[in-house]
Amino acid sequence: MKKFIFIFFTLIPTLSYSQKVHSVNYSNQSDLKVYVVKYENQCDLKVFKVKYPNQVNGNQGLWFFTDYPNQSDKKIYFVDYQNQSDLKIFFVKYKNQAGWRNKSKKQLMY
Image (tube, rainbow, N blue to C red; front, side):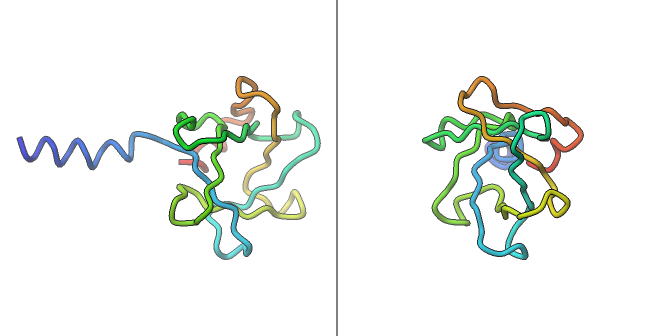
């Protein structure tokens, strides 16, 4: 029984892909470099900013911005130029608009 509980609690965090992010000040502190595009059709991921961490549901573009880096799953750095980025995002107004446009980049947020 103890083995089952141990396996259960070690696998659950790896199965739940949350998107709690923290914006860092320097590129070398980040896990991912992000560029915000002006138009939706230019992005890899459409992002909706949620107000609470429990509103994050998988790798679907629902991001919660944390106050501290140790609370986040990914540390991101916003770059000034598109060619410097790993991921191009577009912020949407409504939760149901969030999601991936370029699924080949989906692994970046795991």
